[in-house]
Length: 252
Image 1: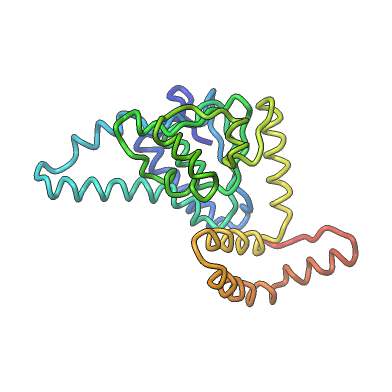
Image 2: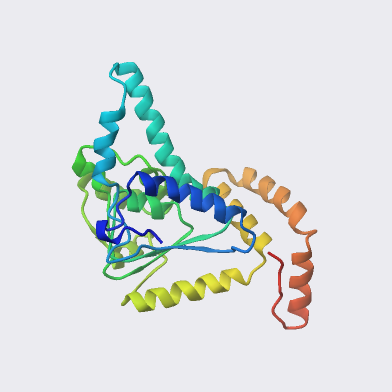
């Protein structure tokens, strides 16, 4: 959980650092098979904390060349915070309610599945701050939704309501209440957690690779992945469970 409810879970320096730390830990913790990412309080995430933006200008070198170089390095650090979600081999489900703005949208764009309550709102707010979204929204969302829709949101900064977000492909599903949302996310997470951990990790790797490569490259990649997976005990357990009409029990 993002746990700054009194600040609508705005992303301060500490949170920017803790997100990649958590996902690196989750990636290495064998007992974790699926991650659910949510926000405490009334909102999922209001975006970057303005104190972070203010601090950027104060801590940069004065000389313009070095100032630009340092700022680029900081932007790449912010990007790496959310890249850690994709680099985590475990599937990540975003459970969204309330506001999901600016950096919050960057955050959920890096997740594998996105579910929301119907009052949830999304917006690319960077345009209203004279900025260009630079932490993943404009890079990942073109792979998820129609470019014309995304362009409208990016150029205008208008709010996208959850039902509309589902229609344009941003969300898997939206729900009438927070309780219904939580129930569905728990159900989906439990379904996924019962699958082979190896198969889950390989499937995530394949889907991300497929997003950015040709069909021919993808076929070669899955051949390499499955050359190891097909020899695993998980496949043997799955086949036996199917034949015996049981649920397989996989090792972490």
